[in-house]
Amino acid sequence: MYCYEDKGNRLLFVEDESSHEIRILDINSRTEIDPIPVRDTGITGIPYHWGFVVKNPDSIYLPAGNRKLYCINRKGDILKIIDFSSIVKKYPLFTTPISGSRYSKGAIVLGKYIYFLQHDSRKYYFTKKPSDYHFLLRYGIKDNSFGISPISLPDDFWRVGKRQMSILLTYNDLEKIFVFGTQYGDLIITSKDGATITKIYHSKSKSIIETYYPYTPPDNLNTQNYIFSVCKYSLNGGLLWDPAKKIYYRFVWPGMKGLDSNQFARINKIYDHFPTFTIDILDQDFNTLGSCRLPNDTYNWNNYFLSKDGLYLAVNRPEKCGKDNHWSWVFHLLKIKNLR
Image (tube, rainbow, N blue to C red; front, top):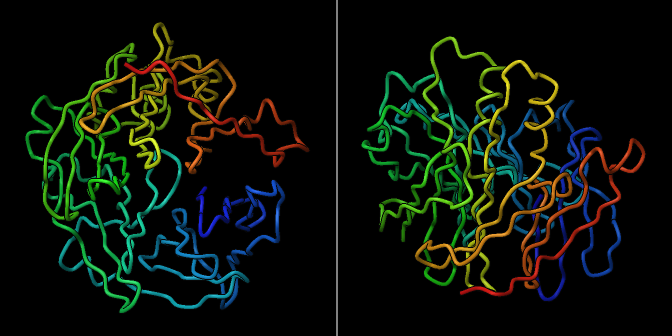
């Protein structure tokens, strides 16, 4: 999900994997316009990709798992394909760039460059250290150049045995800084150039219940145990900068006490759509100004967008929509008040 604004026009781009389309909602008129086809077969097919980012409606970039970046236009035609697989020779831990609203990993468009987070990979956690993971890729739109930024988490991030590299990304246009938050910890890193660390903060949410997920995956970690751990423990699900209000929003899953690892149906339902979450309001030094616990089974934290009005959350949970109403979008605008 990506909100594009230009000269008063506001368009919301939403990928529908079931129909192989990027659907477009005109926010001002509250109508849906013709979607963009994303073909997955034939000579114009794009393989499985990790989200998308909109430079403009005729230049949409999709990072694919084959270490190629595809640019399509409004009609879905491929304008160019950028192959960055050669970067693996220099950075063997490089996986693939990602741009998704899920866990606020959206790419950042800054002038002639696009900055992508690289997709996390657990398989190296016992043989590498945090500074081996250079998690930001910079792509030059004009000259199709690309490179890996040297920025990474400090090695003492794993000082207590926790091993994970899941990073959240946002950009503060007022201070001109990249902001990286850890999903399973209280660490927040800022960077002026996207290459070196400017400052490190510790900003722990006051709403967590079961502390942060103690992510130290054993070699035999199976999917069900992983999902159970994610649901039981607290985690940060998003970190967003609001340029109009000059604050950050942080989505926090507080965790769940007494969750039984044998409650498979319940665990899978929680993992698909967390029943509730807290939104922390943070100042520019990541101090908590206030928090709002959202009502149960109402909002989907993967579907949100920021506009000049503020933060919009989607009321489009599957259990609310019904089989034939999945794309009847309703968004609520959150109003902020009573901040200290």
